[in-house]
Amino acid sequence: MPRTREPAQANLESLYRIFTIPEAPDSTLGRIDQAISDNLAGFLQEHIVAVERDLVEIERDFSQSRIPEEPMYVSHYTDFLKEKLVSQSVHTASPGFVGHMTSALPYFMLPLSRILTALNQNLVKVETSRAFTPMERQVLGMLHHLIYKREGAFYDQWLQNSRHALGAFCSGGTVANLTALWAARNRLCGPADGFRGIAQEGLPRALQHLDCKGLAVLVSRRGHYSLGKAADVLGIGRDNLVAVDTDERNRIDMASLREQCARLRGEGIRPLALIGVAGTTETGNIDPLDALAALAQELGCHFHVDAAWGGATLLSNNYRRLLKGIERADSVTIDAHKQMYVPMGAGMVLFKDPTALAAIEHHAAYILREGSRDLGSHTLEGSRPGMAMLVHAGLSIIGRKGYEILIDRGIERARRFAQMIAAHSDFELVTEPELNILTYRYNPAWVQRELVAATAEKAARINEVLDKVTETMQKRQRENGRTFVSRTRLAPGRYRGDRITVFRVVLANPLTTDGILSSVIDEQCEMAGQEENRVLLDQIQALCAQSVRLSA
Image (tube, rainbow, N blue to C red; front, side, top):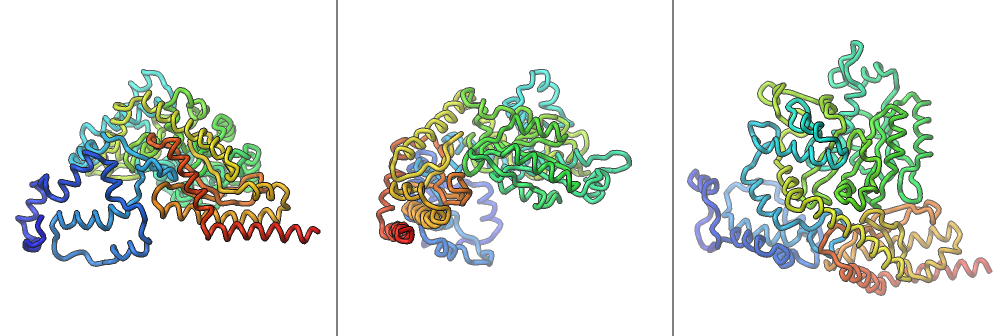
């Protein structure tokens, strides 16, 4: 639109127009919409800048605290978005973006998302969602069957049951995990023997009723941070979220878990739930789910599996065996916006027992009336978009066999990349991929030799400098904008439990090739020769030379 026309005016006529008349195809917004539809990858490549601006600079573009008094033309606002927001977004769909759990989306998700937005359904109630409610129930039933493999008669009875739900949709794994523990808490502390239940009387009275001093949730040290939030919100307390030591493969150590359970029993604290992780965020490892299920049964507590990342592996007949024991879980979290390639905001929690969610059921006179089919009566969140439509689309258009191909390729590519790392003399593979996540670091061959013979003190000092090398390289690689890996901190057994900084790679994008992964390594090798990293490596040489002189 021409810039010379009169400023936009706030009046009823202009407001009516934005609700009834679409933007013209040749308008700025119309052209962007067409460009995204025609060539999403090209649009993102063209409009997201390769070299990022400092975040402090970006914050200046969004520093105004006053709501604009006067309106703005859509075309002018769209120009603002292109220049200030789109250009400084993260190209998560890039095949070289292998550092986080966000990936490319299938093209069909874009027009389907427009349909979802246009319909603007609210899944809290049938009156505002109609067909979306039975569709959401169907999707929950499909995922329930994927996990639990119950017979057809079970789903005939429960899938569209108006009084119960096989699970709940939510914004993501955080709310899904919270919902699972909320239901577990309310079932354990339900009405009995004159006690009206924790929902009515609160936690102190519930503990009196149970004759214990507290409730605890146990999970490995690799457990997701959302569990701390859940312990806080549910009144359990973060101190009673017990982080259990892991074995050399970053899986929960069952002997340590039993020791913690014995300690809690001695302190009068009752285990509310054991949590198994199927695909840890940092390393992608899977806890021994069968053993956890058996212990939970022995303790008489809830068994929850956080499979937000790894749950989609069940779609692969070749690798679902890695999650053996998940079918024994009382509840399971899965994020469709991770390895099911759905836009952000599609988490689910499934329950083995269809009546489990009755423990958190809630009603209101004007909405969520008793006996209605309203899904909102079993969810923490009230108003929710119909994200089940996009999950349903993925399951229908890609199909289980399609997902199997995607899952298998990710796992196999991670194994090949691990082989590439292990074969390179100047890199150290820190954790091998069990699914499609691995960690490694730049560690020159001569430094690796020094670490083999080093004392604990010397190794710690060398690793401290290597941490700075990893941090510097990861930051520069991100700033360069060609490829991206993330970083985290781990405590591998080979370094006596010392924490080290490592690169973290997540291989879920089907467009990532072995060639791109080779370029990730090449870029890191190139950065290793840059001045700031040479200075750090010289410090290690000086440290090693000093140790030789002292030993002489």
